[in-house]
Figure 1 (spheres, rainbow, N blue to C red):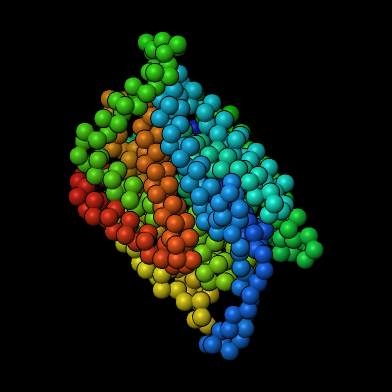
Figure 2: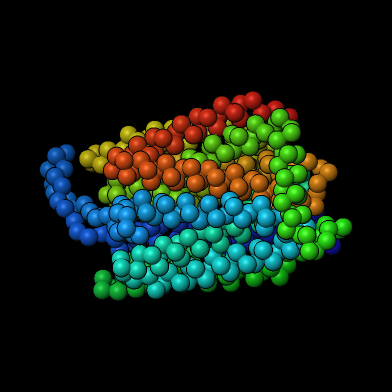
Length: 451
């Protein structure tokens, strides 16, 4: 069937998937599960003297975990598990996205990864002890595969359902919906853990939050599945050779993308600044917990603040792009990210105002996080070749592969530097280099091509 561009019902169905799946990104990736994982892998606390405040305070200490005969720092192991999930997505996306285009099964793939991710979140309820570390990390991997795998097909719908002039606005609307839904569920989880749960059963109510996340994702996605149209299949392809055809389709898309200089420069820039964005987002909770010694409720509040400001940031960047163009918005966002990395490196846990300092940095992250992701998605969508309108899943498959490769590189560097130095601040500093390289390449993009 053919798509009716800018149809309000279809747009609503598309943005509703952001509302559905973004709870994973906030609850499982960024806040409650990383904190829960940190608590579960803590062996003891040691007392540290703060000369500024003349007080002693307790710092969690994690011993290395024996897994497959090797010993890992728990935080590094958490980072490596995410890296493994991204490697899987990278290696399977070319085949899956091309098959979806060839056979017209984009929505079926979206459903599959949604169910995989949401059911994995529910399964985390049974991760109750450090001895089950392999079980917990396995579900962390499959939940991540479900989330990121589904985004390949979700993002690829944007040029199908929206005209070029509306793509910035609709992309921003999706992110705003996602941040809003995630904030609502996180507030509900906070109420359960901090107000309803007693000190004796806080862990149990924390695990309940994993079930709520899975059900929210699974339940609200049904509206998207019911109203988002199926995509047309590419005719003239023998069903028996569909897998071989999928690889040739992906190869064709790859050559088309890098043939155009402007698009090539954007993709290189996107790859490097995505290293910093996604890695910082994935590791923010562990950084606040272990480097700043921020208590769990305050840490969750800071990330909640980030999400609320991200709603404003996505909207402001959408409005600003109409006046200045997408390139200027991207440059501004990248420059702010560089400042965030430097601020993160300079954070000093002995500073009596460290908590407020961290809140300011978190607020800046929120301001540019939603905006740069939204504008990047719509910018890429507007730059796609007009002649291949039936291969959007394959084109966005390549886009998502670049993003996942960036996360693989970023999370590996992050985990390696933690293992090497025992200090996350050097990992944050390393991310600033990725942003600087991304800024360099975006400067050479022809702004007339993306506005």
